[in-house]
Image 1 (tube, rainbow, N blue to C red):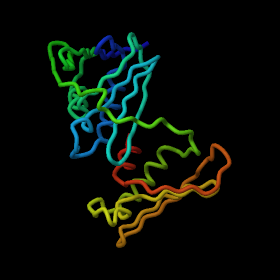
Image 2 (cartoon, rainbow, N blue to C red):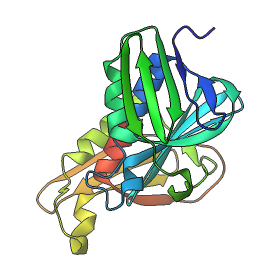
Image 3 (spheres, helix red, strand yellow):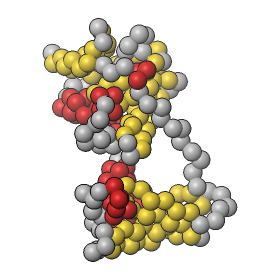
Length: 219
């Protein structure tokens, strides 16, 4: 039974989710957005209400992110809301019930006597968010987050595009170990943690922007 509710509506869109879960998820997704979006749509979060879930997606030039939480979906649909502003508004509310409705291309966030209105962004302009691929394996969440935090201390997020590798964190998988490694030429950090493969595969590797990976595991 959902105790804290939030309503989303635009052209028939309506869903109920827990306030605390929604606030946490909004904050995590908003952290994935570009600090200085080159287009207004990249400042938005896509809220997709369907079946028994609400999914929030973020898109940036470094990639994308999505997360899903259980919901009572009364009428399915999608809207795009200003990400950081919406996260700040929802985080500030303490009422048991938060209502969100849309009118004249605005989203209205209401909690008791408090009302906040934000302009909606065009759903049709939102970039396509890639579907989630099948998992190659799993790691312990806390161990992974600690390894990424350690590696991030050896990255340089201010480098130019010609040396972007100095801002990245290298992930490599061999057997039952995941190695998280980074260097900015002056420092180096490396951590190896247990890895449980989901299927048979050879060595795996990926270089990921350090800031993006740090924000992702922080969620």
